Length: 262
Ligand SMILES: Nc1ncnc2c1ncn2[C@@H]1O[C@H](COP(=O)(O)OP(=O)(O)O)[C@@H](O)[C@H]1O
Ligand SMILES: [Mg+2]
Image (cartoon, rainbow, N blue to C red):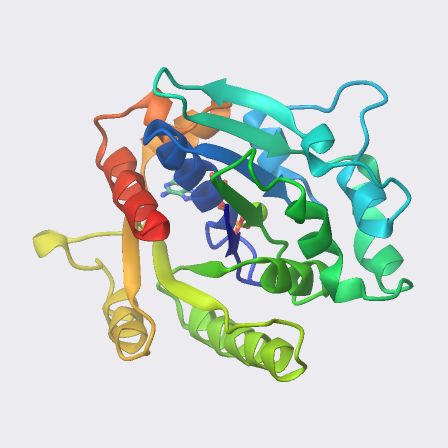
């Protein structure tokens, strides 16, 4: 089982869209995938229109140690493929709204997600954590729990600053000894790319920010154009893999799935 954090404390950069559609692509390739909605705003849960059953245990209860069963009991099913691939979700619930404040009061607070997800071993091939838009304790938990990370970015100046802060945070977590091995940053995912002629970013700013990202020691593993298939799949509570498998967006996520699975 491989755990990947989709992380960037900047909001609106495509974390949730990347988590959903990468999950869809991994499931399409036959993998058993669980998506963790780690954002108190619950956009992933809302997009996929999944909800926990009445009385089902919740992620915040598990993180806080108020409920101690296996994390497989937190899961809600979303979709299944004929090749054995499946997409499940550990959904948002109202108690997620205060999870960061509540976690700050408990011991071993950065390790809670890691411990909860351990019990998914054997049931899933891939777990993707949709991290919140804040450099807070939930993002720290995602960074600690994951073996790999993907960093969605947009080609804007503010994305560069956000990435520098994020990389410093990852380094601080490693320096504090909270991880046994360094986090493997698979790469940047350029989200909502606006292209002009010749397949290059349309704006001067976009081209300039892209050049700066290309100078980082982290590869750009995928570029996803801004496009209707992504927004329509979101509207219809599915992934672009199911909604429009022949689109270039679906193709980009299938390629990203191969990179994450490598
Ligand atoms: N490639 C894309 N094309 C069109 N819309 C997109 C694309 N990627 C993301 N979006 C939309 O942009 C908004 C922000 O993306 P989201 O994934 O929610 O960002 P984050 O999780 O980082 O806050 C969402 O409404 C999402 O549907
Ligand atoms: Mg999000």
